Image (cartoon, rainbow, N blue to C red; front, side):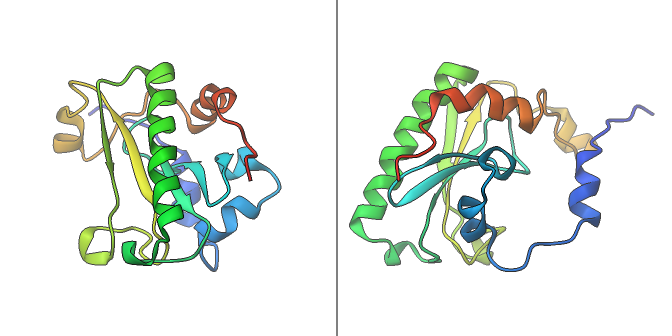
Length: 162
């Protein structure tokens, strides 16, 4: 039997869970790299997903703590989609994906992992990235670390537009 090692997962499994909303806390942290925050805009920010579906899995998050699409202001909604466009351009430049999954899981029934704070996922995709590993081994193979992903993406983002 072959093994795939993912030692960074143990920190999450055994680690102390943050109290409160992580999406409210992350942009307030002093160390943006450690918080995985790539960009701060007036109404939203961009963050790497700490437990990504694929490399380059980013999220666009409004600062306001809301859980319903209908609670977004027009300005927040417009900024989210403008930032998604920019994120898509950057991901194409850095990772050369052949497609994207873009969307929100709103509410627990829709699969939201963090249902109390709305956020938009931008997931780069490549032909063939649906392979046998998730089906047979229940694992995803990530070719590069979060740290390296952050390092590759950071130069393309202005970290302080806010």
